[in-house]
Image (cartoon, rainbow, N blue to C red):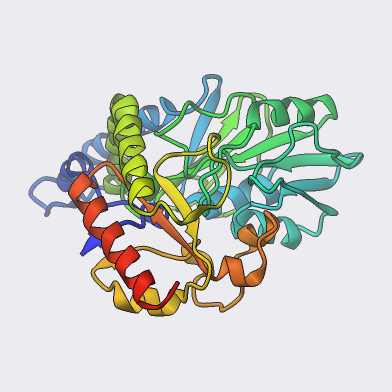
Length: 363
């Protein structure tokens, strides 16, 4: 099978797997030790966690700390529900393109919420009107469905000008683009940058107060209780270090793959901006396309219609609706996600199969 769904998850990098193995081995190596124990084996595990913390922090702005979490969803929940906002600024504003982790966490917080509109290109206007009394503005760095890159630096400035904090979901951008400078809180996850599933991080700018969301033994400086997995931390750290070293090379590789795909699928329409986008994500639509039938006819290609979290609902994509597509257009869209290990042969074979299947159904 050709895997073109890298926005949903990425394969584990061999370097990350290798870094994890010692901490997954049997009793002879003591790699299973609890990193919160004070004996020699525990201290060794704790040291590995701290090395990983530094490697992950290298992908993020200076002047902050990394709190390990179970993933970006937990990190976002902690940022929204466990970071105090001034009584005069209780509101939350988020873009119409935000992941459901942001939208549903904001709604669950009980705060007054404002949805910031986006253009037909899938971009938030950096001068968009934000309600007075907003204490937190949340805009993602790269959209997971259409790949648009948001003007987060200016939006962070706007938030600060009105006395609000700025939260950035950098899940799709971490290790691929420069970090979102100006953010106060950044959520990332390992499995979107060739690390293991089950671990993520919340980066908190120095001086920003954060309360615990999960209570217990007081791990992670009292901010996130629960025993950390040295194996997951080590895999996350190794993946982060590799991503930083390969950032330019990965970008060029994906840019070439996207250009190849567009040349084969030349009659398909791009969803989102042509220029302000991450090249590893192509959201395309074709009039008359029957997506379920297309997927059935292309069983040897792993691709999607949009967010993995929203698949199977039957409803048109909230993101595609936000950029102005009609339900029939949204349902005639596909998302191709390329990655570090995707080859040109993979892209050519997959795109020709998709095009042939679309032609066969009369689209």
